[in-house]
Length: 320
Image (cartoon, helix red, strand yellow):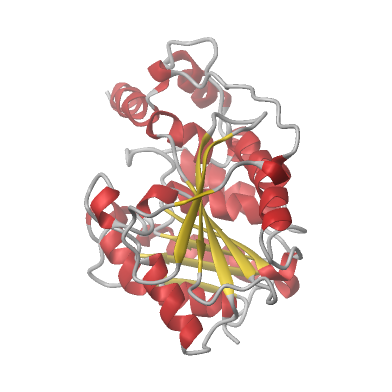
């Protein structure tokens, strides 16, 4: 019965019937993609620019937004934070649940107070039907038992089912970052480049800094979805993800890692994994100055909760 329940729930989570048919678009020169200013988005401060349906040879095209601070100037250089689930970050009037991260509020406030280094935010929109395939840390799948791998593929109902996390990262590193580096006044080095997300986006942020440690100097992973899919008994995903982390997290002396979790709604499944996360960080040489794994009592799995504490990871990664 447990296996049947596992199969049914996982099928609902990954929505495989929609398929992951990669739309291949030849990108000749990403530096010259058309950028438009968004005037119908309500911001606390700053401005938002968009490339619609950013073309990619790796993943299905999706919108990419770039938030610039009010005093953005080409005479200055800015750090860059790449964030997943980009449509949820700035304006609650346009999100499916009428919640937002309040990224522009916190970014503006902290930069105005000179508490953090100057930075811009690159927001990568998700595509709901294939979000799980795009954001699951693909190489962690290799640490699953063979029977679990086979069951996942068999329930997809499609021969075309594939995890796509590696291609998602190739898009970010090989297509999106060159566009940002070529069109905005930003530092391009690892020490000034960060990645951030929540839930599956937290897993992907951990994966990004592990797969591309020479590109990303820090990662913030809020309400990281250690359960991998939907919470079930005998869940094989956490152990696979932690085995991947133990082998692949980047050096502690050159990187920063931030994790956090609450204990309400979906977050109630995360506290049990905190000791495992702490143990891996310690084994890899991380200390209080280079890594955090913070618990927020009474907080749930929502943009409202993440917005209330977003200043903490921003200060951790970018404090002057």
